[in-house]
Length: 253
Image (tube, rainbow, N blue to C red):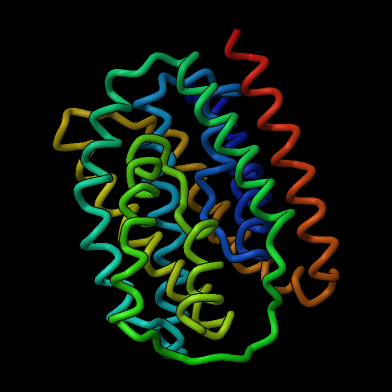
């Protein structure tokens, strides 16, 4: 496996570039890569993905904290709500077979593509810098459901949280993205420790090659955003997710 692990470096650059351009977590692309290309067991793929995201999102979190763009109180609240769901998801990941994992992931990827198609969220920086916590508590059920998927599939919750932060909590887009990256970093740490405590194992050679790639890609992504139209970025991402989702569902049979 070590001889093939080098491919995680260029893949890490590409994945981190794509997701950092749009403000999402990388699990939705790492998992198909590990299951389809690298043929990892589902539980190994999840823990490997979480470790890589911890490194990638940690770098972004530090930058956003320095900019004071993160709504720390909102982020910590949502992370605390996510703890039980992550534990449940991690337990499911240990029990589920690869074919079922691919079916679930395929439909989830297709759902994410649909959410991008239906979302009209713009990237202009209008709104509040901090959320009303009374309003935030009303939507805590969303993160409970999403955290199960995060613990089971290492998928970021940003796809569901950014629209709520924008339309319901009236956060600025920059603050919504920064807070979601902070949450993804925290839930990746929680997920990693949960899987390790349950006896999970990661492919450390893939992690070692992928981490430098995601760090590089995380620097390229924001520059790409400035050069390419936001609508084009979304269309490329939607097209990519749709193809991956179809392939995952087809590959599971």
